[in-house]
Every structure is written in structure tokens, then in C-alpha cells.
Image (cartoon, rainbow, N blue to C red; front, side):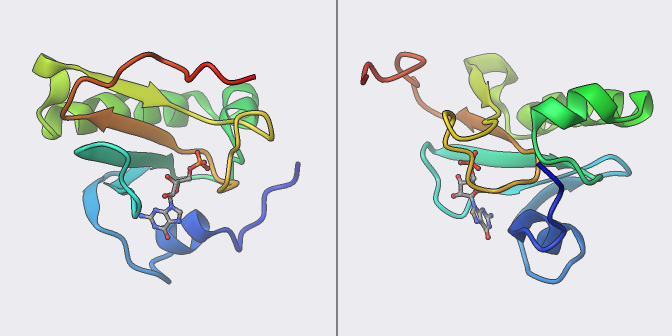
Length: 121
Ligand code: 5GP
């Protein structure tokens, strides 16, 4: 799947639409999800044209991969969940119901998060 630079997170990265920012550096931007599923629901996105974990893991330069992974951990600590725990989620493609075609890692925290997956299907 080709990267579409008109996706909503590309627009947030370019500052064309606002976000509730948590953190930003040369490699990543983190902001609160507009429709939170937990007391903490943050999104961390890399600063590069990657649709999902699939092309990012295959094609992104090493400094961006490292910078992005470090940013995810840093944001979880900034939000105070290194002690009480958190869950990371990155959806890729149709079966995962990925909605926005720019790689994003969800950080959920702030309450017990239950089992990993619902048992449907
Ligand atoms: P996905 O299903 O692609 O993994 O998750 C997309 C996430 O992006 C959803 O949790 C959704 O609430 C969030 N989202 C969609 N549009 C916006 C937006 O304009 N701003 C913010 N902050 N979050 C958004």
C-alpha cells in the first residue's frame, strides 16, 4: 500500500490540524487519542512516510527505528505508567482494523486493561 500524505496523522505532523501534544522530538510525535479507550490513550507516530509497522520495520532507517522505539518508552514514562503498567498496540491492515494509514503505536494505561483480545470469531 502506497503512503497517502493526505491521511489525518500526516496532516497533524505538518501542523495542518491540531493535536493534544504530549511529546515531540526529531523522530516522533505523541499526542492524546481523540476517542480514548482508557484513562490514558496516547498515540506515538514516527516522523516519516510509513503506513504501518510492516513498511516501517522493513524500510525505515536505523536512526528512525531507534528514535521511534525510544520515544514510545519515553512517552509511557512521561505519562507515569512505567510503574503501574501499560499496553502497546500497533494495528496493521484490514484484519487489525487499522483506520489511519500512518504508523501509530497506541499506549493504553491508567486502569487494569483486561485480556489482550476479545473472544469473537
Ligand atoms: P487505528 O484503528 O488506525 O489503530 O487507530 C486510529 C486511532 O486514531 C483511533 O483510536 C482514533 O480514535 C484516532 N484518531 C482518528 N482521528 C484522530 C484525530 O484527528 N486526532 C486524534 N488525536 N486521534 C485520532
